[in-house]
Image (cartoon, rainbow, N blue to C red; front, side, top):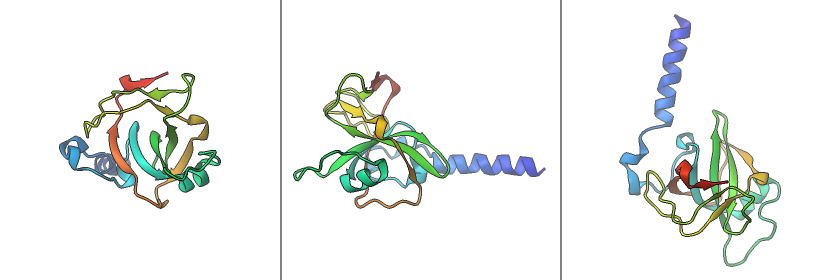
Length: 146
C-alpha cells in the first residue's frame, strides 16, 4: 500500500511540475524553476551569474550587453542541467537554427544560438538570479542541429 501511495504522489508531483503551458502561450514571461522542462530556452541571464555557475562563461564581459540565453539540457528534482548559449560559435557545437519556431510561445529565433555545453552546469532549484530569465519557448528537437 505504501508503494501505491508513493507512486500516486510521484504522479501528482509530475503533473504539478509539468502543466500544459501551451494553454497560456504568449502570456508566459517567466516561469518558476520547478516548471522548467527539457529543451526550454530562456533569455536575459546575467553574465555575472553565468560566470559564477559555469566556471568560466562568458570569457569576456561586454558593456553593451550583459546577458546570455540558457538552454535546459535535463531536469532533476534538485536542480536543472543548463548550458549557456551564444550567437557566436562554430558548427562543431550543437545549435538552435535561425528561423526556429519555438513551442508554447511561438517565438521565432532570429539567429543561430550555439549551445556552449562545455560550460554546462547544474542550477539548484533554490538559486537566485540577478535578473529573471525570460521564457522564449521550448525548442523542438528538429531545430537542434548537430
